[in-house]
Image 1: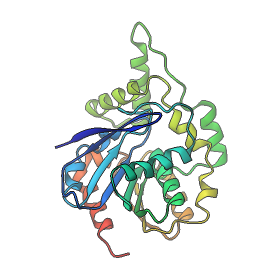
Image 2: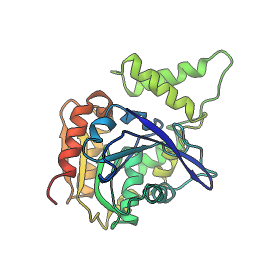
Image 3: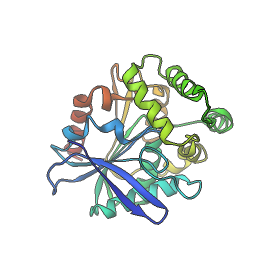
Image 4: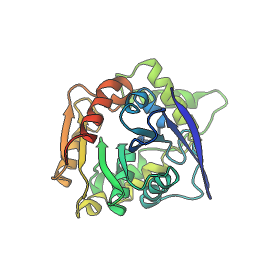
Length: 265
């Protein structure tokens, strides 16, 4: 049910996933959190394809996408979102994004408000200045492949510290995503930590916007911050939902998106 394809850009290729559906349906671009990949949406894409044309994008440097030719800023990732919509023939499109991807999506919507029809931000990471500085200093050090494989244990342990509830199947997928980055898995992180999201969102977003949180989300404490930054947005908190509701509860995820995308402005 999942089809994969690449889009060529001067700096490299972007890997995308989609599920077949009506070709005349509105385009929905989906951005993932770092340091994972668009694999996060494999279970949800066929459900979404019943109502729209969903395309999940591997952020450059993650999944199957090439690394950028330099350290990108948030605006570079945002510009790529619009460029992908152009390549897919969509003048206007819906945009969903999770965590790191949500910052890129918000920046794309701010830069091209006439292009983004509906915006859905899941787990919007709103950091204080102190938190941004702390994470830039120490949060995501690169890993170096070791002859004894100890770097695999380091990744495995890091995942379980962040998500103590995680099962072996999902954790194994995460290890694969970490390894696909090539060691320095924090390139997208550094972009958002250097970006003043609060200042950028001060002028607000013009399109209908949905903020999604979860009571078991690792950054659930940031959801009220996002609501304060975007007082005109519709907000919902999913009971017992983790960061990965698209994988763990794809029907719930797809229903929520469908209802918002089809709702009155």
